[in-house]
Length: 172
Image 1 (spheres, helix red, strand yellow):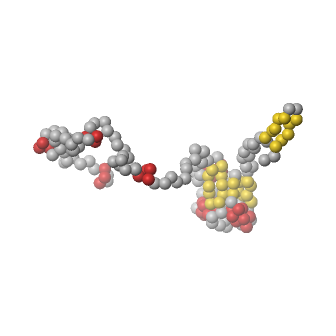
Image 2 (cartoon, rainbow, N blue to C red):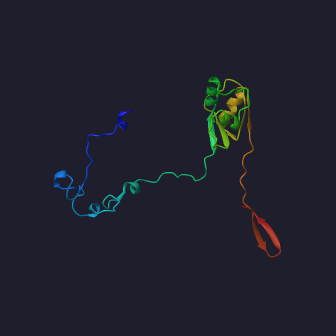
Image 3 (cartoon, helix red, strand yellow):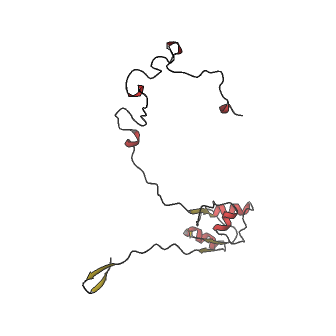
């Protein structure tokens, strides 16, 4: 039980439009005339004809529709989880192991290793991506890192000029 969960039982509900003695009689607190005094009106960001705040502020960046399915983990976190005995650095580390130990969410399908922090023990890591700093630090600690084959995007077809019977490939 908290103070914000308590229900106020000693306050009466305000019933607008129930007589002059109620304090909210006649117009029911809506003033006189105008659009807002009528029912069925919802003026969300209307500022009386002034350009609304959401149009005055500049646009910044964008939200990608592509799913964010790459998990990112720093070397400092791997060392911290090893110190807390959640993972063993002597066992090969990959995305599946980190998901089984509930370190990384199951929605991720790729793993990226970043080089923040230090590794004290040598380890074998399998990941989709790794930063240059992470590669050097893992090799410095005596470990190895296996980068899985990257997803190759489809290459654009070369432009072909059809000139009667001859076909030549145009270079870009």
